[in-house]
Amino acid sequence: MNKFRTILMTGSTGVLGRELVSELLKTTEDKLFLLIRRKKTQTHWARARKQLTATNQDVFLGTRVQVIQGDISLPGLGIHSDDLETLEREVTHLFHAAALTTLNASEEDCLHINTQGTEEALKVAWHLKQKGKLERFFYFSTAYVAGSLQTYCAREDEMAREPAFANFYEASKYQAEKKVRAAMTQGLSATIFRPSIVVGDSTTGEVGEFNVIYPFIKLFAHGILKKLPTRPENSFNIVPIDFVIQASLHIAAQENSIGKAYHLVTQNPPTIGMLVSMSQMEYPGMARMEMVDPASFKKSDLDLIEKAVYEMLEPYLGYLNDHLTFDSSNTIQALEGSGIEFPNTNDAFLKILCQYAVDQGYLVVN
Image (cartoon, rainbow, N blue to C red):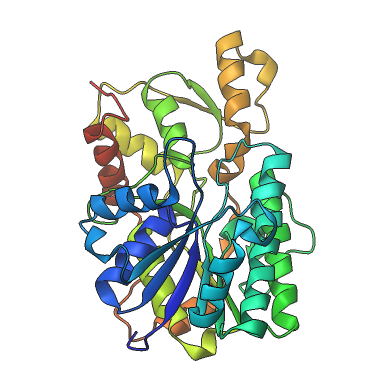
């Protein structure tokens, strides 16, 4: 990526956003405008400083990194008119990475942040295109816009006609991507990235937040979850965050990626059986879990505590009984010759993820 860009980024304090910022500062000369929400006890500048200090990149604050106060849940992303004029003069690329990724979040919150937030980001993009010099819009969707509760091969340049959602997160991201695709047909130069379940670094296991698949592993490891309606051969598509960052930025630099979507997934997803076997071998003191055939599983057979845990876990179950497969034709072509390879998510990788969680005290095993 040799072309100098000025980027406006939403979601820069999230799991993906933090890594995008760090990688862009390390590998490019791009200037970044970070849209950050003010919190009660922290200004938007203070939040940015804390984030950049953690990666030893705070030297860029105020020079290559500028901070704009805003909120994706507000009209126009809550950007002040003076800041908007600055963005009109400078911004050439917009990365919309902000999202509510909590799988058990309410329908209202998911629609407000994921769907309506994307609609507001698109409005800002159109404004910067018409009044400024915006060239590209990049949107981070999810591989699960098809809905994880079905057997289906999701194609990169299509949306499922009959999605089967496991939670409001999937539904809200589906609606959001539809809005981005509509903007594409109207002339917005947009590119869509569809990562699957984003987990820790492929080498170290390091991750900014333990979410999505990690809470399930924790319930399992701590003996809170004793029965699970799944089969050993069922897979779950996880993807290390370093692959998502490297692949998306490489693709973003390609002019021919305009108007396309890209599945950032593993081509050989691990199975529930692999996870259980690895856990029992590496952590013999870890609690055992019984896998129950989903066809014969009855919630009424659970005791009160197990039932409460199961109900908390229900929005996650589509990922643990995953029958989705993903066409990656666009991604394969875009990464050809780049040296960026699809991740190997075997049992050794599962061990790396779990060991990092143990080292950080998130998982407590004997």
